[in-house]
Amino acid sequence: MHCSSPKMVCETKIVADEHDAIHGTKKESILWSSPPSSTPLNPAEAKDVGKDVVFIREFERGDQEEVRRIFYEGIMERIPNTAFRGLWQQPKTQFLYVLLTIMCFYMTKSLTLTCCAPLILMGARYYYSRKVIQNYLDCALHTDMADIDAYYMKPTGSCFWVAVLDGRVVGIVAAQGHEDENTVELRRMSVDSRYRGKGIAKALGRRVLEYAMRNNYAGVVLGTTAVKLAAHKLYESLGFRRTGQSEDYRLPGMSRSPLERLFFQIRHTRYRLQLREE
Image (cartoon, rainbow, N blue to C red; front, side, top):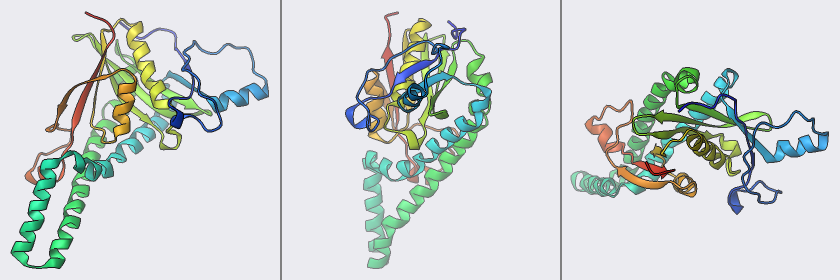
């Protein structure tokens, strides 16, 4: 199993669900093709292609800065999501915070301090979410995201792609092969926030599935700590099925100190898409 030798380009008419479609365009199905022919386009055709088509191609060294920016911004968005939205996924933590607030009232007899307690708890959640996620980000930016060629382009069974729209890199995704399990792991998927809602993430996901099928892998797996429901719906729309969930997942950079455990919790969900029976 190996990366295909010619650099494949995915030409995608961008439109997913009706609410995701590009404004002013009709819904169309996803089309996969080899690199566009050398036949020149007239100006009108070129303008139309620039508006409606995202090209997914293999990573090149010149993409490094934009790739790291998209990855960095995507991870930083998880700080408020994990601190605040993530609390709704943690009923035990909610109960504990309510208990702490009640204890504050009984110990201080101060209504003002009791009212401030939830704000202090939320502030602590934000602080620890930022601390842990920045540690994780620092780890990623000094390992695989520091040298994409070495981690994804050179090893057998791995690859990295970028989505290009209007001449700029707007999305990224990686595939990492696991020969012992005969699976490909979908990793590092992220789309520039300015270009979301156009079906780009789905096109990137399909590129990984195509890669896995071309190289005869039995399945595609992924793990996510995403809080937003939209991310999980995206994986399910691609055909992935949930295979497990952990409330005690440890991100790189976590210290697992008592305060960190109190103010930072994260849910890790595993997905798998079976391509063929082994």
